[in-house]
Image 1 (cartoon, rainbow over the protein chains, first blue to last red):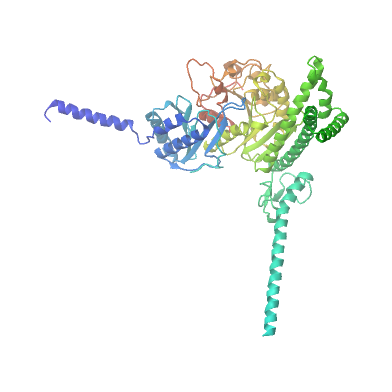
Image 2 (cartoon, chains in turn blue, red; image 1 turned 60 degrees about the horizontal axis):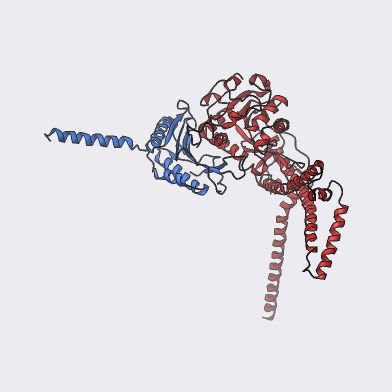
Length: 178
Length: 462
């Protein structure tokens, strides 16, 4: 190891490893689910993809899954009320519990996860409040994913809004599933 | 032994008899149990029997206690026999009243549809027979029978009273066959065609109202205009109006009607409601989906103010009559709904804690700033996505999201809009207000009285 070139190689390898570690935070998600969502051509496919993204994202965070009373696992809304044949979007929600003192950590974790997944327009709304919101877009900005937190009550919600698509899905169950 | 056998036989016979009696008794009991809810429903619908007291049709006063047991066939009424006392407020009583009213409206609509479609059936049968009678391949017997029926139908049509659909079909028949008739004749013919369409719509609306009345949903207002087939409906989707500190009223815009209420207005109210469940401080907020006026069916009609003029009066009457107690009322008008809301506040004296325009073209002609609205408007909010083409509309007063209008403002996120530099406006941006999480977060804070927490806060003059 007297050769300076060897030292340089070792240093470069170490730096590379460090960089890899930084780019692969604890809360990384499977980006294949985002590609799957982008390929959805109707509402049932979008619902399935949205549920996988929301479940995957929630599992990647350091939070406890928890149903939020009064919130259904998904909802559907018309993209244009003027047209009878308008497409709809499906909005999938997943609740979680979190100690209030960890809200800031989770916001950072969500932001890092979104950025690591290559999502667009990542931003935090109300960072200084006890109700911060992290949002991002993907699939050419036609899908949206967000995490809304409630530091006062120690709860939060992942929400995935699909693109506007044709098709129908059944009425959702009354309350969110844990 | 003999005696013993006889005794055994007697015992066997007795057991059979007992068995038969038991089965018959069980059947009678089952039929009785099945019939009781139907009788209660019939009593409620036909005789307006009060759901909450043993006295027929006497509405209890505020604060009365009523039975709180298993639900009856309405899904939420009490069972008097297994009662525990709980207080019932004005909102709960209103729900029971509206349930009955909904069934009555459905019955009236069905009667209308049956009558009109029956008339249309007679007319259509006559037209078909006219064609058949000219068919030379039919047998003499069949031709005679058809002719007899034709004569019978013709007599019915001749005897149809003026004003009935059959009478109108008869009296406009000449106009239908002659394109050179007078303008008045053709106007009358168009009215007949419109009336036929309304009859079909009435049947659909009756089915819809029956379904709502049979559900456990909480409607606090329903009324149907039999002349034009429009419905005004208000449903509580979250919270309790009797005890809420704040009530958010979600008012839709162009294109909304009873047929898409569940998929549009109600879904928007549910989205706001679910956001309130997640955010801090949302506990005391009730949310009402309020199709409380007749929005214009399309963009062409939305350019005029007729629907807003009539709608403002409807909104003021219906919202003003909701049993909200001492709660602060925040009304959110989307698109044309904000114009009708502006009319309600400006000309009909509706008093609110907040008047909120979401992608609204204006609060009505003559309203150029918050200073033109009365004090009853409360705090005035205007939210518009920067790509929402409503920005181009200018026929209903000044666009309230303009800075000099003086309304409070908050951000609307992009939702899932595909923003591109060459698109100055996107029609989808007009529907983003109840979809985008940032927009919903801000609306939730406004209607829960925490407006200082909204993002993109811009202070208004009022």
